Amino acid sequence: MVQLENKRIVGKKYEDMAAGYISELGYKILERNYRIKSGEIDIIAKDGDYIVFAEVKYRKNNNYGTPFEAVDYRKQNRIRHVALAYIYKEGLPENTPIRFDIIGIIDENITLIKNAF
Image (tube, rainbow, N blue to C red; front, side):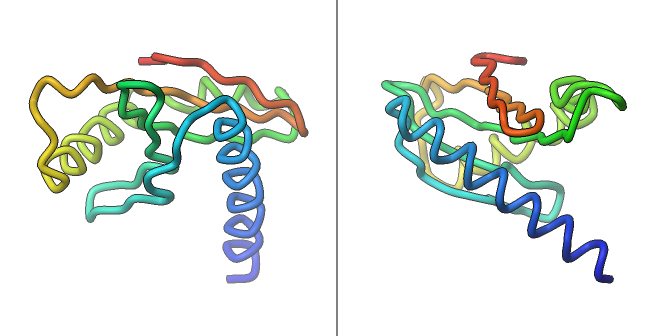
C-alpha cells in the first residue's frame, strides 16, 4: 500500500509540473484527472480553438523506454474513449477540434508532443 501511495505522490508532482508547463504555453486547464469507469485523462485543456486531451508520463531515465513509448495503442484507445465521454458529457458540438498531446518528463526535462496520436 505504501508503494502505491508513493507512486500517486510522484505522479501528482509531475502532473502538476506538466500542467504548469502547458499553462505557461497558453493552454487553459479545464480538468485534471478526469475519470470514468473505463479510464482517466490526466489533463484536459483548451489551446486556441482545440480541446486538448493530454497524457503525462514520467520516467527517471530512458532505461526502460521513453515516456512516449509507454502510451501504446491500448492506452491511446482508452484515452480516446474517455475523451468521447467527456465531449458527450459537456455537450460539445461534433465539429469541436480536438487533439491528443503527450507530455513526457524525463528526470526534470519536459517535452510536449502535440497531436501525438
